[in-house]
Image 1 (tube, rainbow, N blue to C red):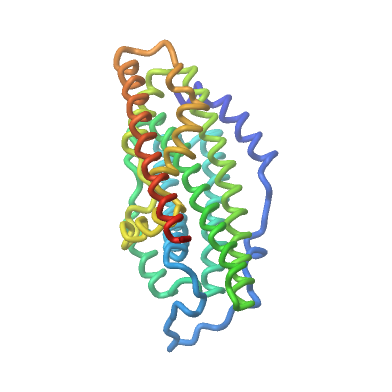
Image 2 (tube, rainbow, N blue to C red):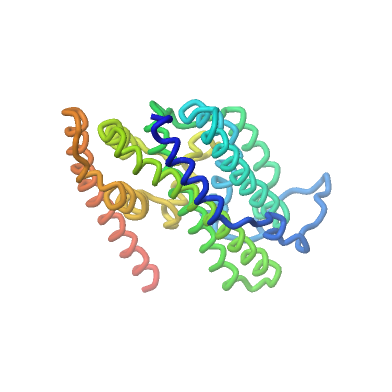
Length: 312
């Protein structure tokens, strides 16, 4: 499979290198707002006031990026360590580490999160090295396609919350910090979109090589996808806040990831030449998509009613 996909990977890497935007992470940090951390310093939420859900999103997004070395290890296992695969993994790793650096220095300069809590959580996350269980090369490519888009959306919506904060805060320092955070996360989200496009189009090519294997992998990920970061301390509570705020939740996962990728781009319902097992998986995917759509509609309706009630 890797040999068959290598020409397409070459093409996609070339496209990536031509269309990506080189940017400097130090330009997205409000250094003038920073101060020395005295040894006796104890963080207070008033250092940079923001809603708990936005702080949770920053916390989870950064620690997910910090777990990068273990994703590299797994990508090497399912994508190979030679030729174009090693080159792409190197490019991807560099760009993802840039995200971690930009977010961490932004948070430290603005004091958006308690640095002690953040560092202790980073130790737990990195030492634990929790990553999704990838069952095959194709399963890995399907997973990262959905994961990269999910990560893009999480960064994008977190940034939008910071932009709202920049307009609402009465403190000029906090206005600047929030706007810079928006700028930083918008730039990171753009990178994640390029990564998503690489993997999405690689899976499209894989469909022409072995449609049955791809459909089985899509079924696995439609049924079992989990956002990166499950090894983060307090992940469940952070995830609840993030979901309630509309930064990332099941309705978003269905409407902004599964529908545009699985249904519209990969057109899983139209794939032909399937084995009996894959044909059954294809049918199961469509049934599950319909069920997820109904759940998403109910969640969206409830959120709309809650927002209306809050206004009234």
